[in-house]
Length: 180
Length: 180
DNA sequence: CGCAAAAATTGACTTATGGTAAGAAAACTA
DNA sequence: TAGTTTTCTTACCATAAGTCAATTTTTGCG
Image: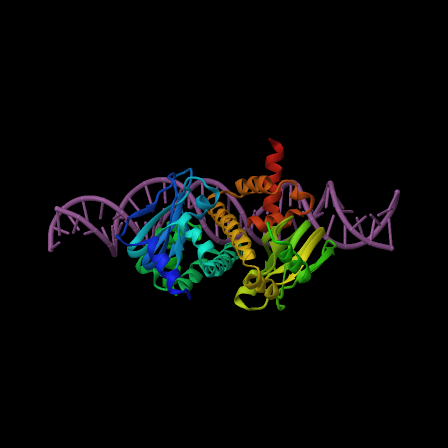
């Protein structure tokens, strides 16, 4: 990101750096969402809980990713997602509305954010296509490639709930892989 | 979209309106992608073909949606998607690079496009969460709500390949629904 | 309209993944 | 480090969805 010093200063002025412990919750399902987070270290995830109480992970956020409940922010509804810290992490916290205001002051930020969104859209498109065409085992292999050593931060059931399978199925897939 | 007349004129100058017949292909898997399309009437879809020859629909685009192979455009690779016209449609064709250049001339366009991307991200997040937590029958119901009377334009196997099930499974789901 | 091609349905069978429950292993915590 | 809790694994069975093939229905074309 290339910003003028003034823009960077403005960003600092509306943000707050936070150190998080494993298990801390930044956004909770059902509450009002005002904040968005830029991850500088560690690992967080966003997930929803369905009517049967099962968790489904939407996103793992590691260094340089943004995380929040964008569904809630853009539709002005209460959070459907929970954002939690998976391991000792550092994030920069922004008020989403304030951050949005930066575009009028510093138009260069708009393009930074547009590129970010484009990158994000591409990764979501790829994820959907993978979900449509790959088996659970293939999705797991790909996941390991895309998030190398994320397993240091995550529990297996986090990964399973991201891949769209049960933790038991993931365990069986891992057992199969180990055999070979 | 609120644009100054100059901006609108510029848009016209770099675009071309096209009328498409059912079955026409705008982007073909394996080819270079230079264009992006804004749909003003009708219905198109983008899909990929997997190693077993099966189709997987990424997107249905109706009025006011954009469609292209954004994976290819943003990673500068060859198309992994095919974009085809499902029924008599009208689109406005842009050269993606040229359209990108508009941001330096007309900054207001940047914010229009950012909002579009945000909307798109939200819809992709929802789709992923639905795929993770809903059964095939529930996904089909939701699809019908979200795309009312899209069935005028689509074949059942298009919908099945969007939902991530086979055409036969969709047929059984429809038979079950009809019973009730 | 009538025919051919494409799409949808249906039935019988297979397979991938889910559910449950118990025990083993790993990760915390005092 | 011992003890407790959480997570992971495994076995056995259940189920949703896939596969293949035959048949019916719909669509599009000459």
